[in-house]
Length: 256
Image 1 (cartoon, rainbow, N blue to C red):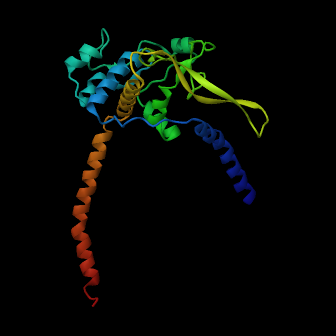
Image 2: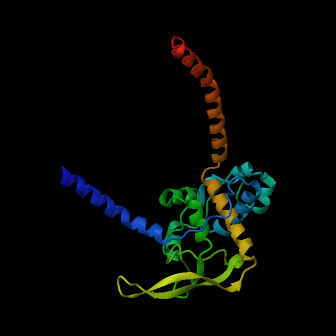
Image 3: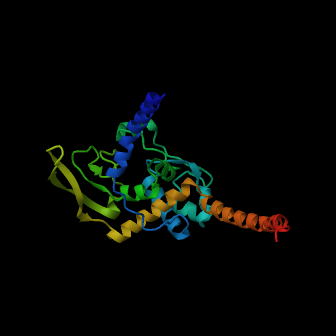
């Protein structure tokens, strides 16, 4: 029995060690602010998503008319967020097929309906991962797209926001590993090669808005659910308070 238990523990540790190591190697930056409840930021994030992400990534679980929840009218959706031929009630789907996506990028671009929740489940911090990832692209001529990413090495996705951020290169420093006795490269940071249309702070704020929208899109009812949960707890507390007082009175009535 002890040998079986030890075997199971070793198997569990072996299965989880690579994941834990991978998480330790990724240094995530904290998103500037939680924009998932900021209506103005969500509207901006939706605009960035439709114009830059929805060409290759679909959001098949989301309809355009759900954007009513963040204050957009049908006219506003039609004017700035709909492609030709789409209707306000349509799903956010794309024409790119999985076969073509795999042929062009090496892997089919994933659907982004619940990407923030998916990364939160995998890493425990979906918004921070997305925020860091979208700010960590750099020029790499050895890659088919000409781009690479320090958070997702050898990623197949090109940097679609490069016009906003500009182009940057990754700076590495060679250090000798004392344990293995060989030289390793350590990431030091990024160096801007060509400025984009936004300043660094403006780009970080734009990415924060986009990440906030992705978080909201994963669960549009999250804010309402949390508010409702607080109200339910208050109601239950007020409902149970008289019962608690009565039980206390009955229990202690013969105690002097």
